[in-house]
Image 1 (cartoon, rainbow, N blue to C red):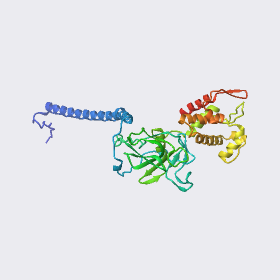
Image 2: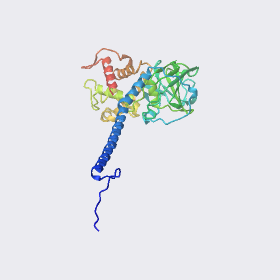
Image 3: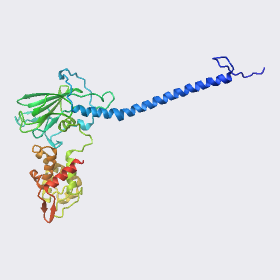
Image 4: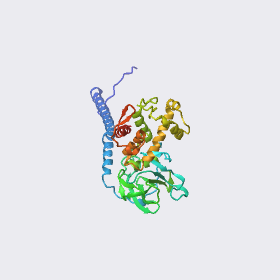
Length: 385
C-alpha cells in the first residue's frame, strides 16, 4: 500500500486547508506580533520609570527638602518616641571620635570624652561629652540622620525637637532628639540662647555661651545612645557647627591651612630658601625658630640641614604650629574666615591682631605684601580646597 500524505483540514471549519490554514497562520503571526509589541512597550515603560526616578523624582525630593528648611515642621511628641534602633548607614569618617589635640572647623577640642580632672572643681570625674572651644554666640544648627536614598526611606521627613532647660552646673542647655533616630539624645550645654520646639535640619536652634559652671566660653556636646552616654561621633558635631552634613572627602582643616600657607610662602617647594631672610622650606620657617620648633613638635632639635632635607619633618612641624595657633585664636575670632586670617597673620608676622594691617611689608632689600593682603590670599587658597 502506498501511503499518501494528506494535508490537515482547518479544524475550525473542516474545509480544505490551503486558503483557511493560511489565514489561521496569519492570525497566529498577528497575535505573536501583538505580544512582542506589548513586551516592547513594557520594556520602554520600565526604562522610562527608572529615568523618571533620577531625572524628576530625585530633584523634586531635593527641592522639597530645601523648601522644608523654610517651613515650620509639624509637631511631634518626643515622649512618644519608641526604641527602634537602626545602625546608621554612614562612613567611618562620620563615626570618628575626637581627642583633645584635635580641631574641628577651626575650633579646638579643649576636653575629650572620658576621665578627667574637672577644670573648675579639680575633682576627677568622667566627662560625658566633649568640649569645643567656640566663641560666645556661635550658632548651633539642627542636625539629624544622614540622608538615606534607599527607596523605602528616601521620602522620610525628619523632625528635630529641641527642649530647653537650665541649671547652675550646665547653665542654659538643650536636649535635642530626632524623629528618625529614636535611640539618640543630644545634649548641648553652656548656651547663651536656646530655641525650643520643632524644626527641620539646618535651622539655628541655639547659640553657644559661657553659662553655668565653666572656666571660659565653650560648647559641651554630649550624645546618649539607648540610655548610655557615648563618645560623640565627629559627624554630628560638624553638622551642629556648620548646618549641613560633613563631606567625607573634606580634608582636615590643618591640612587645608598648611596647603594654603605653603602655596603662598614657597609654592610648595620644600627646598626653598628666601634670599632676603634666609627662611627655609615649605613654610619659610625662620632659621632662629628651627631648633625650638622642632624640639617642641618632634621632641628633638633639628639642625638647619636636617630640617631642609626632610619634607616629612617640615610638614609635622608646620601642622604642629598651625594647630597651636588655631587653639590660640579660637575664642577671639568672629567666625572661621577671621580665624583663618588670624592664624595666617601669626605665621606671617607673629601677631594675630595684625591680620587686617594694610601696611606693605619690607625685609632687607625685599618688598612683600601687607599682612592684610597676605591673610586674604591665604583665606582664598584655603576655601578653594
